[in-house]
Length: 147
Image (cartoon, rainbow, N blue to C red; front, side, top):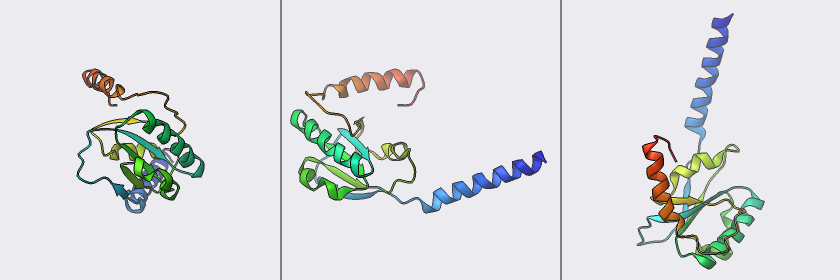
């Protein structure tokens, strides 16, 4: 009986991995600022109407105080029309589950990325966070942890 359960579990894992391998759609680049090589930047990953609308308010507050580039991954790029000039990279995604952020955060266009949630409102310049990022990354690298 245990052998049968093990074989069934193995088959389900195999089917699941094949499903995600062949049915997962890639990210589609909608907008990219030309002739700029961005090292640092801010990243948003949002899906759904309400979270995309929240991100618009967050991006407006971020741009009020900061000049670093912004990238956004969303399934509703049509909502970004009013702030399209403030965003350097727009990616269209098709989320497959609730942990979509984990899938797409690795696809950031920046070498040093600060991820911001859609409900974050920026009230001052936060560019210096990128300096602390280097210290944190080095610390984690020594401790053999991934950030």
